[in-house]
Image (cartoon, rainbow, N blue to C red; front, top):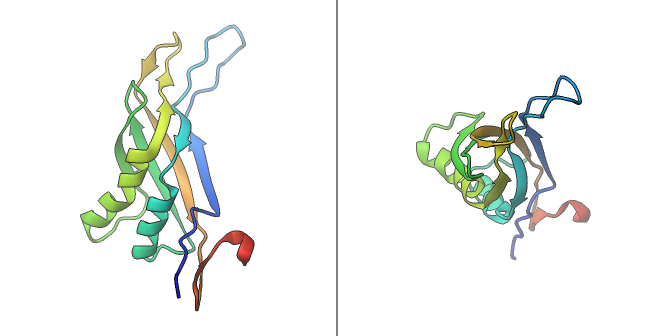
Length: 132
């Protein structure tokens, strides 16, 4: 009997940014997510940590080059190794356009989001959402 680990049923992302006051003013914006290719790695770690059917909020610090350099999770784990293991796929596999200031220059910023680990356990393992 082989279990399958789904990528994710839902990943919710929110971008921290500042809206312009008028159409004449340049727009400042937070980092923009370009891609995330670490879904399977993150799902595997979430399964090991028994985060099935939980929502985990996170904040990533993004440098002026668009590289994630820091990670904070909404849930405080007893072991630092658990936090590191959950942050590792976010830091390694997420790609961003950097935040921009009012002049259009790349600046450091913060990207916040939530991951819904909507995985269902059955006797034969995990089910993809379409198999439920």
